Structures are given as structure tokens and as C-alpha cells.
Length: 396
Image 1: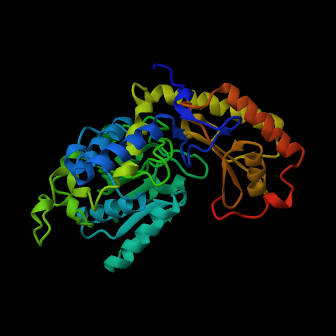
Image 2: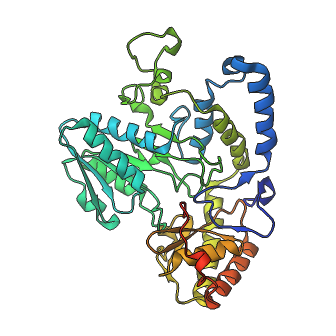
């Protein structure tokens, strides 16, 4: 299929306009039957032979190469496994080892909180005087000094969609001698990314958003190829060992990106991701980006024209915005619950952000037109002003 829109490949419930693929991608239609085969034929019939016969042991690198194609990473520079939080920990710990004597990890206030939490935990564990500094997104460049060991940023702000200039900030970090770490959770599968061109040392990301790997899908970590054989993995798990089945008592890191593996890979989750990634075969990320921007511009114009009380908090310039659009509204949680009740699924981020994601693989202009109409009705008729929409669920 050459067309960017591949709606027929995804299961979207009838009548639903799904604008939350930036939080959890929908189910690719091919995955259930493929997973049934994995369960029955691989786990069921092969049993433990599946590690060799079904390629389970090579799966983290094999799938890593598939993901790597969408983020401009060369072969054998991306490996899958664990969660994004674990991969953040690995990346930051490795970066600090690369810059002994420097004590500052720099991030921004738009970073996803788990990245900051993991750094705080690492600092407490190391207990060597490291410091996490966070500045406003626009102040990052000026805050990179010779004291900074690592700059850790999420390329696309999870609340507003504001997008950092990857190449420019990486160059600035390198000019000051710092290691650059990018979190691509809201970039992979959403915008064109070229890690090779950026020259960043490390990158991490998740696969359950735009890559549609399903809830709990494994994360990935990228290491620049020239560093892969020397980088020091803080989490020295047995599958990152050079000879895991020799069962030696002391750790010896594996070759290249393999050393960033930790424990047993989540075979079933990774199989679901591998089948889900087939929807990306032959897709050009610039075409995806162009289609996404067109949908966003249509959405912004429609919402602002129909509901001027909603305040756009995403950058108005699409070149500075990822693949999401966010509006501010005092009663944003209730309004989003009312929209979901009316089959327009976005999500809410505290304190007052209504967030909508745009994935042209399964969204088109007709979907956006319907979404705008329903948003206008919910807001103009104050359908959100109902007690049942104001009780917070655990997940927002």
C-alpha cells in the first residue's frame, strides 16, 4: 500500500473518532490472528524450543532494527526490552560515566515526569553529588554549560506538543562537552527523526503510542554505533552478558547494542509489536508528517472557529509542533469525559489540558470534520457540565 492512510489495517470501533493514538495506539487488525498463532504454534507446540526455533532470543534486536528505520538509526543500534523508565535509567547512568567530574543533568519543565523521577532516583542511588536542573523549554540552550554532564530532553512535549530542534540542541550540547539523550516517546512514528544526522549519543522511547504495539509494549534504547562497544551498562543483566549461557559469575558486557539488554525479553508483547509494525512497511515518514500537519491545521481552524473559548496551547506554527494539538479549558477533565461519551476520544493532562493526537495512518479529513462538530456541540451546549463527567478516574 502506498497511501499514507491505512485505516483498513486498524480496528477502530464503529462511530469512534480516535484522537488518542499519542497515548495508546489502536489495535492493528492483523495482530489478534498473528498472536493466536504465536500462542498456539510457538509457545504451545514449540515450548522452550521457541527460544531457538522461533527466534525469541534475537527478537529484541530484530524488532529494534524495524523501529530503528523510523527514527533514522542504523542497523544494530537499537534494542528492545523493559519499560521506558528502565531505558531512561540506563541512558542517563551511561552518560554520567562518559563525563566523569561533571555533576549536572539538565532537562526542562516540559519533560515527561517519569524521566525526571528516574533521574532523581539515580542521583539518590549514586550519592555522589549529582544534580538535576530543569529550566523552561526555551531556556535549555542557554543553560547548557561546561558543568553539564548530560542533557536529557523529550523531543515533543507531552502536554503541548511543542517540539525541540533535535540537531541544534544536540550540537549545542556537544559544543559544551555534554552527552545528549533524547526521549522519542512522542516522536517515533509521529514525525521524521534522523538520529544519525543528529549525532546524539543516546535515545530512548516507547512503542505503545504511535507505533501501536499495545498496552505494555516494550521500550527501546539507541546507542550511537561508535560508542556501542565501550558504553557501560549500569543494569548489567544476564542477557546483556557476552556469554549468557555460560553462566559465569562475573559480568562481561556483550558486543555493541546487545549489552543494553537486561532481563528476559517480553516475548508475547514483542511479538505483538513486531506484527503491528507491518502497518509501517513502505511508509515514508515525511508523507506521514505532511498528512498529520494538514489534519492538525484543519482541526485547529475548526475548533477555534466553533469554540473560541478554548485556548490553543500548542505552538501555532506547525513546524514547532509534533503530532498533537492541545487546548486549555478550566473544566478540561469534564469536557474530555463528555467528548469520550460522545465517541470523540482524546485525553486530559493536568491541570487543564485537553489533548488530541493525529495519526494519518487511520485518521482522515472526514474524521476531523466529525470531531469538530461533536466538540462544538459538547462545548456550546455545556454537555460537560454534568456531575458524571466530573468524577476523576484513576487514568485521565
